[in-house]
Image (cartoon, rainbow over all chains, first blue to last red; front, side, top):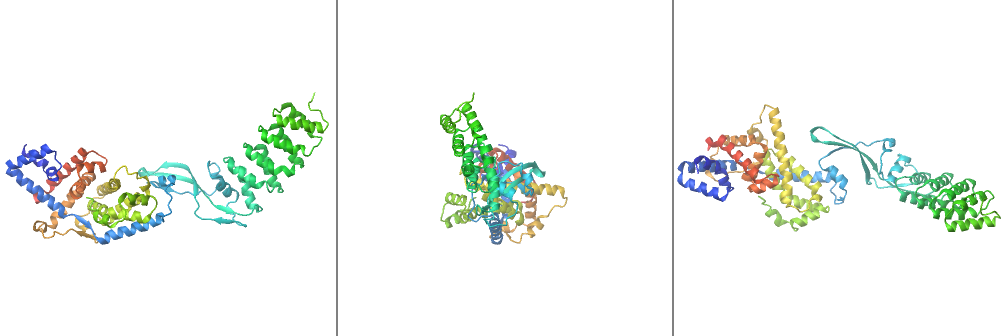
Length: 311
Length: 201
């Protein structure tokens, strides 16, 4: 080994980071070369001088750091109640700057999809009008969020604009107008059939209200979910004599693709027989392929002394 | 480097238990976990950045990140490695920013100025070693100047090898590079130090 190589290897030699063979070569060279031994001593002295500049944090600095951290964790909401499964928020919090644009106009939110239906409709139907005999439970309810847009900003950061719907829990009487408005809106929510079933189920107990009855008739005619239509039909039973309701029932009987719904409708219609029904029942006999419904239909026509088939 | 044995003796739960408890939202467990490592974190940041204020910034940011991301820790590596990756990245960022600042501003902060601001920092005393006692303040200022002129990576590797006593292989792992690359960094750092300081010792 030459002196130059030995001197280059000295720091790694002192750190014990040389491969075994190289370490051996340095040691052999040191035995032979007084100049390099002097250089090694100098290197060691340099390391010692560097060591002397070592700083250790004082107690006060450490305690200040700990106190500040504790304070910041408190602000972050470390109160032992933190849900660790809220992946969306956690991901957002990691290294992103989030600018919260609380979009005020509900029209702006209208384009959003996947909003939690109750939160969405509650806010849309009753924006801030919380007067009335209901209670609001909880202020910091969970929110539903939707990323409206993302854009890169300076320094490799990202700006994310979120639409947020804060959930509120409202409770009140079914008689309450505001509660009914919410239920009526929820009964039409296109994204959640389960919510529509529940809402119609609640509303069907109040068909005296013209608004509710309108909603039930609409659901019976237009809801894509048979469960919702059956619930609506249930609520309309006591109005089987009402001309508007009968007209809707007649249309449903001829159009609805669900035999369960048609069965319920024909049972309801033939409880109150009118002459105007004959044509409808005859038309039904022409197209109906469900045996039970055909039987009920034939029986009703016979009882009305009408012919079963048209010629 | 871990010198955490003192703190570890004081805790009732062992480290994996503390981590799991903290992951479940146990604040006291999290604080204990912090105390296992925070002295070493602060020391590393302080020696790299030579500023109590900047060291505190790294301390806060590092443990806030640990707090926010602890639920993602899956025990794939040691917690120490995981923590130090966060800390070393923050320190490297701080060193890089400082380098940019220095290039922008022609005024270079003197080492004396920096040291004078460290009201809460104690310099290690020489403890009766006559050779250390003889080291002039001028030499210390010079050493700090040379350290400050190393690239952030060289500075980091030198700090971890020389002060923290980490093996090059571990340094490579922490910095996301190879042992060989860490070795080259260390070599350049020591060459620069010898060139600048060789005449002083």
